[in-house]
Image (cartoon, rainbow, N blue to C red; front, side, top):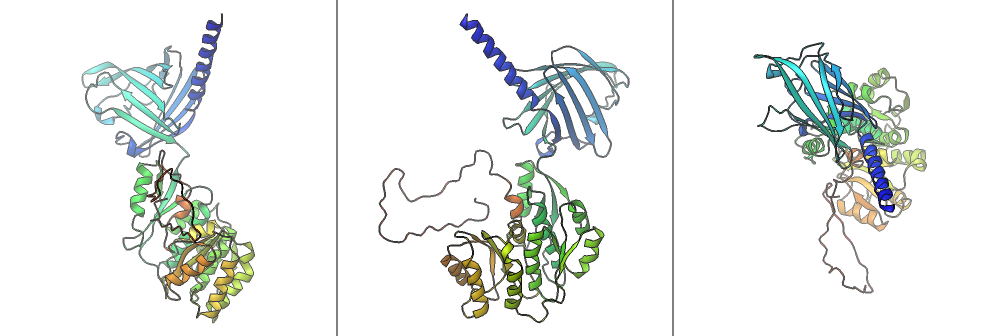
Length: 467
């Protein structure tokens, strides 16, 4: 008796498992162009799938130039169900010269296969140049092992040669982001105000998920941003919508923005201070000419630095900022917006600093710059051990070795440069499935090492993409 009961229980368990897998198809799906067969005129396709134990509904939509929509309702027990044809287009290949008769029916038979795939057979009449004929197509919907992709393959018995027709879909709300192209102009009297605002916007909207990505010009220090965007599209299934103006970007994300901070173009350091407050308040930074646009978006002014720091030294400005904001700032991350000086500033790393509520500065680490050096020490002293100094030192004020020596003396980590792009975006993306970081160790696995009585140093250097 035990064997039949056990078999029955295993059968019920298998059926329950398959039913649970079936439910994973439910929801809205968006076609990934780079992984799919050419859809020609329609270009885009979505599926809206509702399945339960016995019934299923699949709504297929195509566009955007001309809209196509088809709703098929059927059971998954192999029985035939009729669905009226409301659009005669042969949608997956409109140039075949085939037309389906409006008002006639498609006959649908469907069943779940053992591997969890849904097989849907469509039978229909159609008109071609030779007159009225009968056709059949077999659709097979299959989930990926991680259940994040859905593949639909289409078989036509009359088509024995040529590549398989296949469309790959991702979940509709997954990995959709916006992209904007920065230019090689970071001068305070030219493109810096707008691009600085974009970077603050990125720091706000990428707080919880990757929504805004930038590509940079050909002269930019990190020259892989366009190639990385292609990788994200083709290998990580991101869909990017291009933004072409700051107004469009602010309008897209205005629900995320809590306000704006006005910096003074006559005092370059005021922009660095503005990033501190913007990070604390989920705000954007704007110069005077961008204030009308911020108001147009209905945003609230949080502070206005125009005229506040006129005639003051960087030490005086940062002393004011420290007294005002330091108590609210992170002790894990502090940001240095150094690098080039003069009328230029390249603050691409500010997005991540804002995300981490960092205090921003470009204070000197040169001992002879007594006041700034003492303030740098004071800030480092209050950071948590192994905290990060995010960004890079000022090429005008000190040397690389002076900054790295000083921060190392406080057991802090240097991570930069100030031009490091898109960190608030990339931080949300896990490594590829199956990836395993490998290091080139000089130690023999399994061998026992007895530390000597001396100081050991571990040096770690990456290229920004290695980890």
